Amino acid sequence: MLEQGHWQGEIWNKRKNGEIYPEWLSITAIRGENGDICQFAAIFSDISERKYQENKIHQLAYLDELTGLANRRMFLDRLKLALANAHRHQHQMAVLFLDLDLFKRINDTLGHQAGDEALKEVARRLQATVREGESVARLGGDEFTILLPEVEGIDSLGCLAKRLVSQFEQPFRLLEQDFFLTTSIGISVYPDDAQSADQLIKHADVAMYQAKNAGRNQFCFYQESVGQQTQNELKLEQALRQALQQQHLEVYYQPKVCLKTGAVTGLEALVRWQHHEHGFISPASFIPLAEKLGLISMLSDHVLTQVCRDIRHHQLKMPVAINISAMQLLDPTFSQRLQHQLHQFAISPKCIELELTESCLIPEQADATLTLLTHLRQQGFRISIDDFGTGYSSLSYLRRLPIDCLKIDRSFVDELPDNSEDAQIAQAIIAMAKALGLDVIAEGVEHPQQQDFLLAAGCSIAQGYLYAPALQIAELQNWLQHRQQLSNCACH
Ligand code: C2E
Ligand code: CA
Ligand code: CA
Image (cartoon, rainbow, N blue to C red; front, side, top):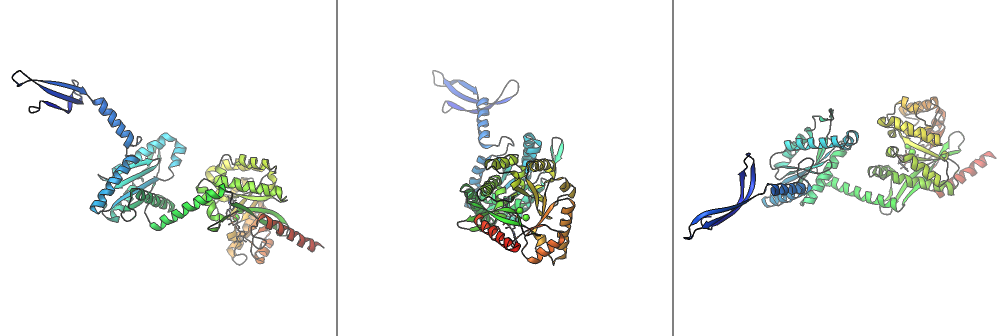
């Protein structure tokens, strides 16, 4: 200032009440007639408000409001910086991707406020576990990332991941109750697993899903082969969405046959997907995918519409069973949609049987399911329990359910009559069905010996390749006609 006659800058000043605050200060030297400095003039302004606003803007842009952790933007900035550094100095770095397991349950049962509290506590625990320089971020929802700008080998990464998982062993105190949360962690390492920021995150995400699939509450390193599998799943997902849109799924029908008379007592609708590239794709693989993607209700609507159309156009005279997946029963609009569709085609519920597996009978939903099924049965729908014997339904609950029929699972029919355990199980199911006044049907009957055993054991109906596989509607018509002719001949 003595040299230039002027200075300005930011200083900390103290108010009379002792509070420290930032000030912008400009000082100008005032010289007398002889040119010597005789005074200084200072102008200052309080910039605490501006500082506060700047800080706020920075926070909004770079910090997660709920937890105070870095947000996605800050995480990406830091990741890019760390990548450049790792590249320059030729060392490894890693991204950990964390997702809380079944977090939605906390939100759904305790409310969002408790969910927020849990997220804050998670943030605290994660922050306390990492070292200086390793940054924790919240990407959104219940997804967190940890950036390790420099790692000393895979072992130390595994140790950290283990410590992170164990941070969840202590319960979370929410609404004055203890709750347990767990997390699944995926890890990807530069330069082995990926070269770019996007790829590192994506691969850590893939690894996280692998940890979930392996049973949650654990960590997984990225593996290229699994990444490939996820790619395939993605392709399948695209294809399934397309197939649904373009109505490329077709319903086939498998007859159910009365063991005593040989008469056809009903049909089961089984959905088929003929993919133009991959060929036939089994419902056993795309139904679970449709459930996972939330497409199952749409798929089932599609199946039911086709069934209704076929019943109308081909004047099918017997009940048609459709398979209902557990997720559909949880859909509150299920019964309404069902009835709406039947109504559109003027079809009575008596023409439709609903096949539910034991997994549909979720204990937590027992009362709701009972109410729903009772309502449906009053409307005239027949209800049967599919794959019976493979689940864990309690017999007392089963007795209260308004059902018409038990389907003995194929796994017990396969080795009849030689496998004595299976024979006993089949006999027990048949006896039980009778005691409860239910019909019983055996599925997957392929050989006459199986048929003979079942008939002797008192089973009334069977279904399987011995009679017919699932058939296209035109094939089914032929099959039915042919069978009719046979039985006419037998009568004469
Ligand atoms: P599911 O309901 O237990 O159906 C019986 C499965 O056994 C069918 O396989 C059928 O083709 C097959 N099968 C029938 N007879 C025999 C036999 O004698 N031997 C052998 N080895 N297999 C036989 P598919 O059609 O591949 O269906 C598999 C599963 O996919 C079904 O099991 C069902 O759970 C599900 N599914 C099929 N269509 C639908 C649908 O429209 N909606 C829903 N939610 N699930 C469906
Ligand atoms: Ca079935
Ligand atoms: Ca079955």
